[in-house]
Image 1 (tube, helix red, strand yellow):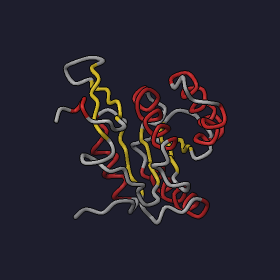
Image 2 (cartoon, rainbow, N blue to C red):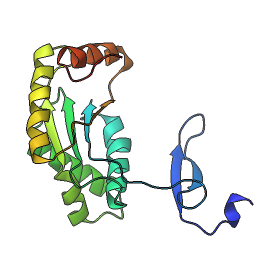
Image 3 (cartoon, rainbow, N blue to C red):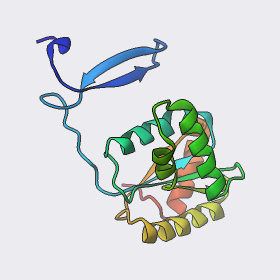
Image 4 (cartoon, one colour):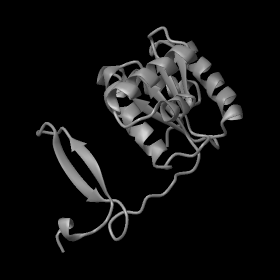
Amino acid sequence: MPWGAHKRQYVRLETSTFMEDTLLYQPIRGEFCEEAVPEPCALVVFGASGDLVRRKLLPALFALRQRGLLQPSFYLLGFARSPFTDESFRAAVRENLLACCLEADLAAVTDFAACCYYLQGDYQHAEDFAALRRRLVELDRQRPSGGRHLFYLATPPSLFGTVVRNLQQAALITST
């Protein structure tokens, strides 16, 4: 049976690999893919003040929150060199989501921004990763993640090795 013949809810996916602004539709319920709310977790985003995070990651996370696919205790901890505080980062998140998510209302955006935190740091400095570890412990007390921390690198590829080494040195990840 062709996809169009199914009377199901579909999710709109944007693809930018080779084709700009191509839209794909995939069924999200029924025989193809079941949505499940994951266990509580925290997302640490390196390069949190950058364009990729503003244009793609924040709107996607906001959409997941709106659909009830993030635990209430979920939090995002942004890490970058830009001089933000928690409050100024939240204000930037709110401003960005209100500008790019036209259907979003202020209350929903404010609720999402409340789970966003920020730590200014340098990717090259091990002491900033020790501060990251301390901040995760602190935030896990407020918003339990079960120790599940996902690390998203929205940085230039030339920094990947440095970030991973510093995460290992700070005992935030282990090699297997």
